[in-house]
Length: 387
Image 1 (cartoon, one colour):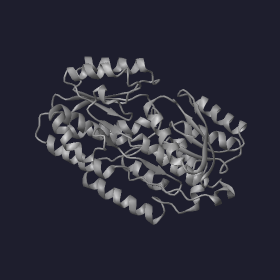
Image 2: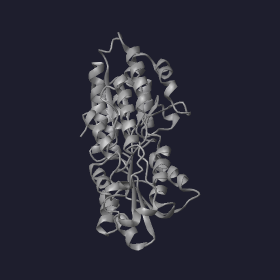
Image 3: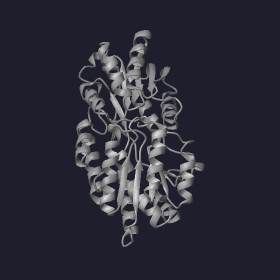
Image 4: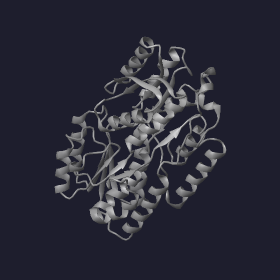
């Protein structure tokens, strides 16, 4: 995940009817070759040895929420048709400059081009709060008409959002949810609790329902990480799997590697690692590979860091839970235009059929890639111009 970030996933070039069709094709392909299910033992990985024999094949899924977002995109496009968009100047501000957000930038750029409006994509190089706040202040001075933001700190972003709202500048929360009282119009992103649940279910399948797991995470306090870990732990309830440790690396990949190595060395009963931030999966994979325990220690990760996908292919990582930053950028561009031109009430009315039960969350979907559906997922990325 990005805050748990670093890597990426999908959405669609111009989704519309073509998107729905492709989603159906991919789903069908997944079923036919166990790409969306995967009854194939290859999910255990080429280097997983006989340890895989007692596990259940992990079922992959790359449908995300693409079909619903395609419908919303079409509705927004129709509602904006004929409106004067010439004065719009949108901004997308993410939380850190990493590979994860490349897909979000591609989607945002695509949306701006279709709308025919100006816009800027900004990312603090080192993921620092002061950098993000400075970026927002600079963009305000440049006369932006709307802003989507993956907030590093929900408390620190509250004042800038309030100031923007007062000036008639709508704010859309992406990637990491914000408290309702922060003032963002909507949250477009991953339902993090559901993502954690999906990771937990995959871990149960990988371990055959028993063992000890160590969680590797960039922060134990950020909302998205807390929600993911809670979903993961809830999914494990009733099984014979226990979480032995939760290790924070303070968003430092080298520390994540050290944490994974130490966990493996000091606890011989650990047979599972869950990597929450995008770099945690590759760090876990490297540690397991170096210890000569590929296949014996199962890894479930988050996001599609290039190294994560390489480890999926070789069997070092059993599955990775994916987000949809492309759609956060693409649909986000349309939502910002609608919020400014149509108004908040009209925009929320268009979005309402696709919102979660809380009334403010627009899910970009949760996917799961295994060795069995990796090729289908990579084909999907290629179709979006992401690679």
